[in-house]
Amino acid sequence: MEELVGSIIKKIVTVILILLMILVVWLDIYMHKHNNSNNGSVVNEKEVIDDSNFSNERKAAIENGIDISLIKKIESMGFVENNNTEKYRPGNLCFTKDDYTAVLGYYGRNLYLYKDISFENFKNYYFEDDLILIEKFFDKKIAEYASDNIHKIAELIANNAKENDYISLVYVVNDMNIYVRYYDEEIEFRCSEYSIGDTIFNPTELQLNMKDNKDTKTLKEIYNLLMTHNKNKYKFYDYIYNYYDSNNKNLCNVKYNSNNYSFETDICHGGTSNVSFLFKHYTKNSNEDSVSVEFNPDYFEKNLTSIIKNDIKYFNEKLFTSYNLTSTGEKEVLSVISKKDSGFTDVYVDDNFKISIHKSVGDNNYRSYTLTYVFN
Image (cartoon, rainbow, N blue to C red; front, side, top):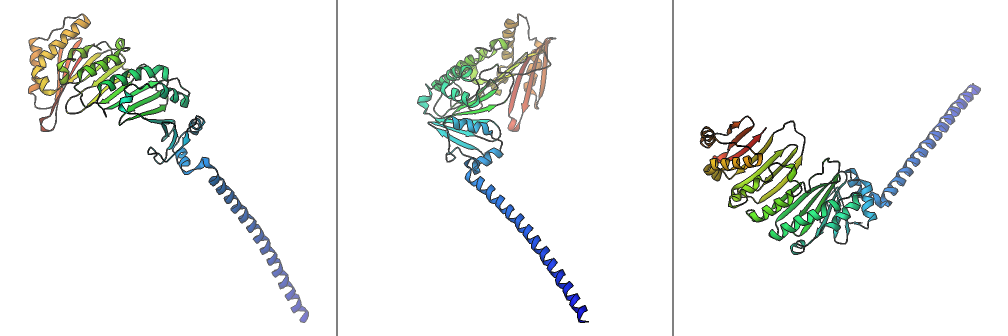
């Protein structure tokens, strides 16, 4: 009996020892894995903290898609990261050098470049150095295409504008979009690199916010400068000269469509101070040429038939034609004034020439008219 009890006790002890050995091995494996995991975390955390290239600002900027190669390019040119400037916004990066502040902002290869300059100095400011600097950022030729023209336009505007007038230009150069703005004694460049296609217009767009937008002389000079190299693209580029006199104050906007080219200007004097000139190149499926124009509604209603007759005289001289507005056509044209609601009135001078008038009536009997001449 005693032998049987001893045998059982030995077996129990043996099982317990085996279980203890298994437990020790399991604990050893667990602790080994746990220590390795902790060690890895410490190393990774240390790397993040020690590497200045992964500051919170840089991580946010890179997450927003800012090109790392552009960051390196800016720093190689002597710019120093400085996110304490007033230009800083979460998700972008700011750099400073001399008089410049450069901002890499939001998604892709977008660069903002700022420089303070007084209004008096702006009148004689030349943009070549700024554009050469932008060239180096993007390895693109820009200055030779744009600096002289930007300078001429800026000089013309500055010499005629009032202080704190808002001035902006948009250039499309060598697959770069360059937006230039001067306001509140600061020049701002916004630069984007992407394939745009045609770069036949320089500038592509000019916008002004002028305190005296009835300054016909300045507007005429600006228009002439913008059209200097583009006259051959617009059959009716000189149409606007019919109104560059006292009547210009009643002219709101003009738009030309000719072949694949479009030009439009907004010089409305209905209480705003916005002036813009915009060039476009596009592909269309029509062979029509057209001119659209809007006038002050009171002036338009009082002078409708004389406006159209004078315009037809211009088109006859331009196209070597002999169009004429008949008495029936005059009645059709004048009928648009008496209409209470919005709508179109089309007058066919002949198979190749149509006059279209669109009347729009808004709240408080506000009226606007768009007069369009269409040639097949």
